[in-house]
Image (cartoon, rainbow, N blue to C red; front, side):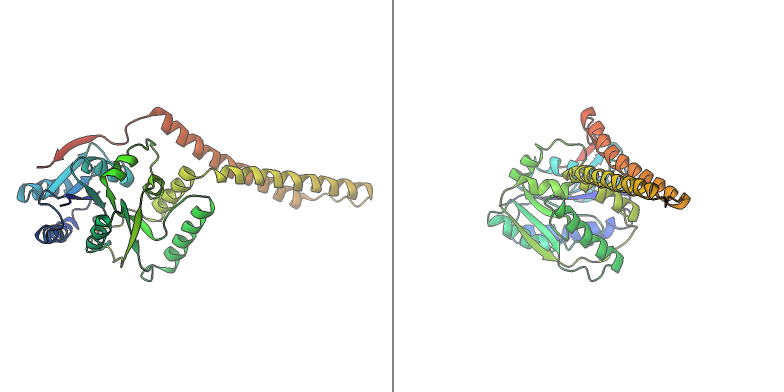
Length: 314
């Protein structure tokens, strides 16, 4: 039989953890009783430097039931690093690993179908939300635009998929070969290859607590994904520079012709607009280039992506 680990990154989740642990344990035991997974399967909560009582609750659940495991990072490292820490730890104990968030938005019952796909030979099974009808117009529009933009830039990302997925030990071993510090797992996992499948589910509202991805963090996460998997923004900057250069030549020719014909008029407005426009373009281009340089800076330092302080498992 299959040994399954369910990896759940947690950051300040004390409000939702009591219900999350209850539902996840019920699902795990139902799968064990049904003979689909072994009794050595576990729910692995990863505490990402929480400031509330999240770790205390995780330790408490572990004491009460051995099917709960806990991984404590030395400090907050962000969702992607916490998720990777859980995956890399779980792969040493499991045949396959399912990752999902603690907020109960992802349907835990989809794990049954994921396991069925795994038994059929799929190394990766993506959980894909069936609809975005519950999202606001703004969130729905920006999400669709993000996926289209990523694909246009050449990044292989699956639409309406977050980090709810099943991965086999073999695929996790392959993922471990990716050593970059700037993590965007939604783009990295498809690069692993191997046979994959998708499972659709209905995404619910967050059960309790606050979202860990407000608009500012979502925009930052999206930009990280773009710059981590495509250099096309740099090509776009080159194109913009060429276009501005051509326009400036045409403007110079126009100014020269009007001067020769005696129609030259001192244009304060056009001069100011041109200066602001060119200045804005230059600053944007420098900003994009700076983002890539910053990523290179982080990569070459080779600092650890996370440090494990404690691991509760039995």
